[in-house]
Length: 288
Figure 1 (tube, one colour):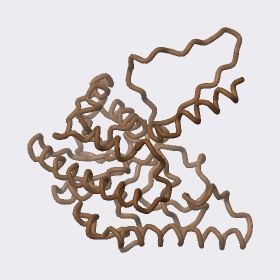
Figure 2: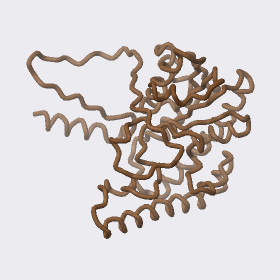
Figure 3: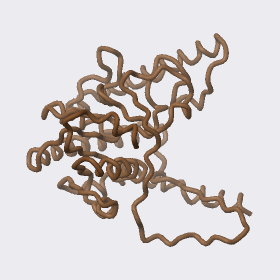
Figure 4: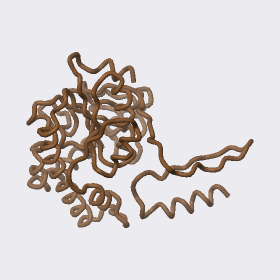
């Protein structure tokens, strides 16, 4: 985390880190919080459901008022596949925007009540933090465990079927077309839901310089190594600080290990409950 320390501006004493209540987003934030707490006053802002994990990490936590854990889980982890079903996508998106609007309102009230930080670092899934920070004049950075999702002017674009780096002019042209497709899709969704999205204070998808407004214009902390990513010209705000790894203590039972045997640990992630049984059966079949 030395690269993170090197980026903190002089004069900063209090840093708030924000994340939704999902392990893949919360745990990297806790890792940064544990490191930063050695030199700064650190607070973790999330929902009531992760207060125990924050405390177990030895950090001070601030929980937003209201029940976000159950509604969030229902939205991002339904018992069925959303896929590209238009009605399901529409319902899911409207629900998410409504939750983000409430999150933004509660966050502003919390900061006015508990005091504002000198710097806020928010997981990339909370774009509304930037608008709240703008109103309260708080410097805001984004935390991004998956830098490959950033739009860039070159390189293999994300969301397009696992494209590899281009090797010739035809492939370069194909990648450019795919990057345009991704941007047009985002713009179309933003236009279709413009009235809903503006409720959370986001009025445009891209800034005048072409950068994505969902991420901080000051600093995007890429939680990876640049050499792990396909070559590309990264936005000026991107700083690679390496992986942020930490898991809070839990009551889970440790798996049994046998001497002189190789073991493979399989994670199914936080989401897609509807598909986990099928994945588990496939792993069992593969193991046999």
